[in-house]
Image: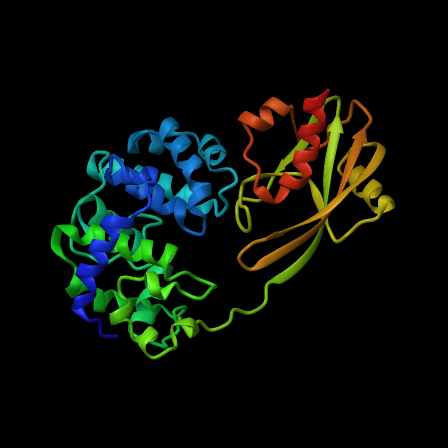
Length: 352
């Protein structure tokens, strides 16, 4: 890929005039840049705002992140998904405490060695927080620049990202590199948008964009289709006993590793199947109530779930953990896949 150096100044001027007022653009520090960049991966800006504020209030610096109990960390992350991001944050924080005295290193190469930090995040921290002349290429930047260059390379191919990084590197404007990287991200988020026609007439690069000039901007970027997600049918149990709800811990590896979940079973069970499955857990069902179905989409798997609220006879607890409503709120992190069923229980118990 070849890029026209003339794109730099119009984009910087546009960014200064049009950048959104986002909380992480104030009081810029390496730690704050790192946290919001990880949170924004595969998560919407509006969602991240509240999480960012709560996270920084609870864990204001790297030593605090390194030392927090994992369950407390995951509770702060609850609902953001992709929990490996939170675990890698803590692993990296522990490395930073051990190797760099609790402060992120002002080196792109050193940042790359930390768990969970790839070329994009390292470039963002290095350029935005430290003013180093390195690119930060994410999906927004790939989309913008393949349109600007009329490049039909597959953006899902890691070689395309490396080619874009190489093309951008000589254009980095010294200490203003962080502003340029953010300008590309902002342009991709607000003007050169995904899954819709770009707003070319509002773009500061319209006169320099080969995709627009050739009339092919809407066809770019090119991305090879993903294979279809695997669909799994599941039945989720909301097991109630004397005002408490049953939880269990997922296995330490695999999907939603080590997180808490509502117990369940594979397949869509009828009432007789639910009774048998609950008894297999060492519990005795008294009443069953069907719940509205729900689905949840992970990266490679889609869960299609039926739910049952099950009132249990007192006494038997099985090999499960039992939580009050307050403990669910404060102690146990549950993935958002279970929220449709959990919400019904918490609302009903709150009304009592």
